[in-house]
Length: 602
Image 1 (tube, rainbow, N blue to C red):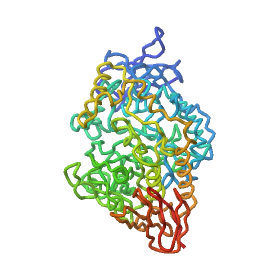
Image 2 (image 1 turned 180 degrees about the vertical axis):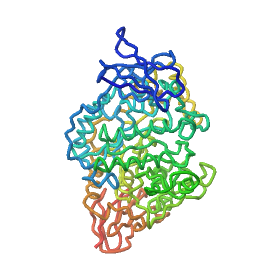
Image 3 (image 1 turned 30 degrees about the vertical axis):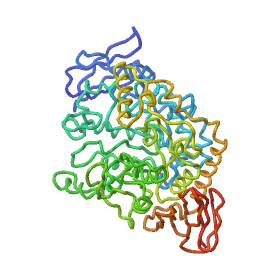
Image 4 (image 1 turned 90 degrees about the vertical axis):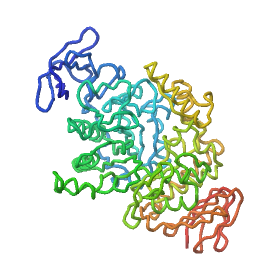
């Protein structure tokens, strides 16, 4: 027997169709409290197909569907998550129970990580990730979305695992396999909007509202009538990934687009309930926010347990307490590195590119921390207190899916840099106070681009996406023929990693460099702390060199194309790692052009 439940507060009647093809049997649901409906169906269970009908409307998938084997428009299928036999019973969490902070996060897209583009195929490369030194595998969204291929940010079934990737059982198997190799798993989830194709939520209740708007249209209803159950729909989804699929962390997409004027922000609610679940499960659970606000409040603790929970007192408390996220992405560090290494200054790179700006980001996290942002045309952000802020609460990176895929041709940073410049960027990220993140293939300077691709089944929507992409970059001088068509299968295929190139030429050299840096970080406690106040940076704009000091360690970078001596602040020094052939003489280290070395003082 299976109990079917549905929240449809304004419905006059609700039924569920159970079965397949011509064998569908319709069962009425009984009205309960709070707009909920329910029905017990005797001969239904794991594997049963079903769809709901509201007020004699068309059969529609379940808003909490765990399985969409026929795609986003087809019926839902019952999935019994408890049937899986877990093998990682002793799993204590990433870094042997110490959580994600400071560990190496590896962001990947299931559909292009391998030619097959499945969770099962991904499992075949877990040994390489473990050997690299990865602590947490971050999967880009796996929630069901239209078509076979896509980035996943247009998902419409947050509870389901995309069928082309292997469905929900395959995700459980992958997480189990990761844990057996000592790898944690982070899942990228999207709660700020849903895609336009296959989104049937409005048939059931007030899931969206016109009181707020986002770049994708009407906002998810977090603070209007009916919002309590919509918030429950989101929080229950997050907790389910932790409990039923054993994931260790969630990456929350663009949390600044979660429009919520409630006394208690959705993120604070999610943080508190995640902390409670973590206590029950006995392992650390993490929430990683992508936020454009540059606000350290995102990672500050929520109000203490037992604090006021109603009225103006709670509203006032919310101003001074945090949202409780474990960590957040730091795009400012990325922009500082990218603009400095490539020389690009357009768009949001306009305020970046100097050595001084990079130094500020390495020591104070944000470039925009209350000052003027020329890209936004206003003051932006809030300052971080280096003496009390743990730098590990910010993810630092040289590349991400956003910063690669949102370029016209999806070109990686390595396509514009010398191997030495790429080595400099990697060294500055992997020896920083931040929790480092690597985008798939970055570790061997993958030759493949990572482009924007879709597989939409709505002809009009597909044409609009293709035309819109071309028009967007035409405004920046790109010829239409040079911008890959998102709907072409060749665009996805061109983005698939080429694993056979990892050991070839400069690819192999870059891979060895990443492995050495990651190994050094693991072995040296001073390189794993989050003490921002213990980081010092010296630089010379004219000579184009920079030295980062952390305890008894120095990262010396020569950004000039010609070799030169880079002065050190203390002696003696020994070279621990060198991209080329660094030599120490007295109080300076000699570096070749576009070169970097990590040195131990004393």
